[in-house]
Image (cartoon, rainbow, N blue to C red; front, side, top):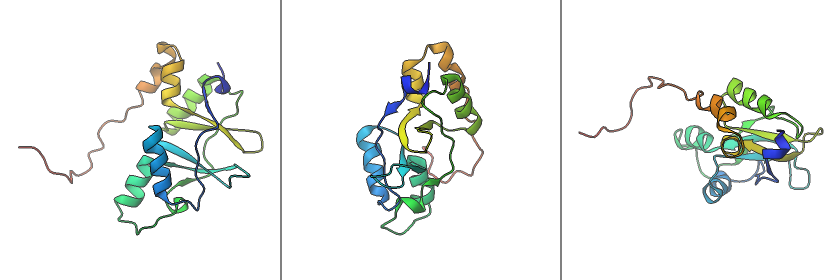
Length: 151
């Protein structure tokens, strides 16, 4: 199976100049965890990716002033990408190697044409093919507890 067989074609995207609220709204309404960032609507060349975790850790946790453009919070390129003819086994390998949950699919000139997320793999692959992804769950980091505990 190839990337083009399981990818979400024509994914939602944001521009570097968009406010993070636009990215967050897309994630909320589409029930997704990340949005590709492209150069412009007319030229959707991939320049980065913004995730719900980026917004939480780089904006909210740091009390970043509002408004906040996507360019200040996103993970900028170069990021790992694949071509439509990339085999799914390579996509799984890249996700494991890079500890990411999504891989953009681009044309040979870097234009965004799709995205493959863990959910695509889980729903479109046989269980034994998707199994390696389940092993990527990271153990607790031992970071100091900053919240309140139930008593």
